[in-house]
Image (cartoon, rainbow over all chains, first blue to last red):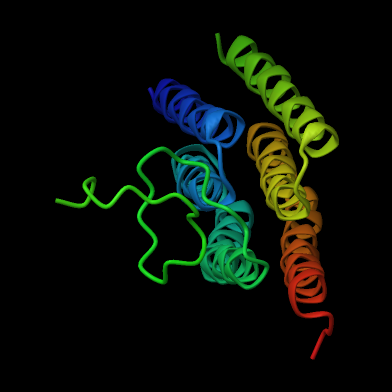
Length: 115
Length: 88
């Protein structure tokens, strides 16, 4: 029973990570690629770490909890640094209908889009 | 059943790793490369985690912790040097 639960959670976490990678592959922009990298992939790894509590013994569970706390602290910091660097380097927003309130990153901004 | 899911998970994580490598090679912008490198390290951490949990050996998780720390520090250093021209 425990093995079946572990298998189901593992497959679901792989599905989540795959969604994140597809998001990074398909999104047109650094700012939108950050969504897939910072949320979906991290949530897949966290779910995979959660699946260890079903089947593994204590030494593995403690190390996995330490690892996932570490990744949960460091992933938002690194994605914020990447977004800030993209803003500082004046990286263009390629997404259709992108709204930039500083008026510097989107060149031909349609004023009627914002309603 | 259990072994089949383990092998499928390992093969699929290797496929995701190869997709990350292809994205690093093919991307135009430098920041996208840094982003894909961060994702690649998370995929590698997940690979080590699956192997360690399934086979019951705890030693690979130490390597995963060190890998996550090195990835964080290298992403911060690369991004700051790329955008601002300085590290500190």
